[in-house]
Length: 87
View (cartoon, rainbow, N blue to C red):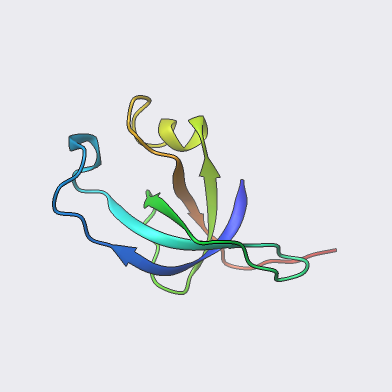
């Protein structure tokens, strides 16, 4: 799992049927200690995240299983962060 900030959305009228009804968001991953950002990725939203929110993301098989084991998903948003505390 890692953290990211929602920076945009994608509208696709033609997509795999297993993705119908799913919101696609552009998320910019970041390191919570350094605030260094990485290249944005496309993720399926499973929790109703919105623009500028900090979210929890998963990739690979964890992302696929959040929707459908056979869905063509590489990244999924699985949580919305309320607060980050680094000790």
